[in-house]
Length: 81
Image (cartoon, rainbow, N blue to C red):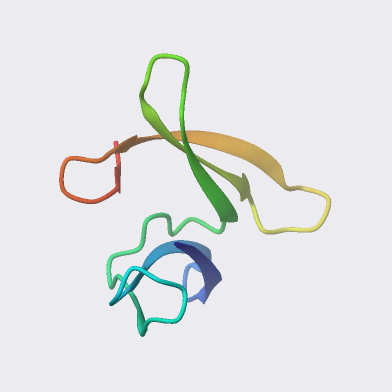
């Protein structure tokens, strides 16, 4: 699950995991943030070429938000390219 919250760098995007892969499990959030540049409410998808992408809004400032599309690598968990 993607998780958006406030941090020292502004609004951030993190990845959370359930210990039983179900909604009722115990959840933990990765220490390494997926995105830490004042953006959030992300979604992951595959583009028309099969590449993973993260889309989210940036910056987290009213009336200045716009979508951004970032490349992701998924060889050992999701990381930005």
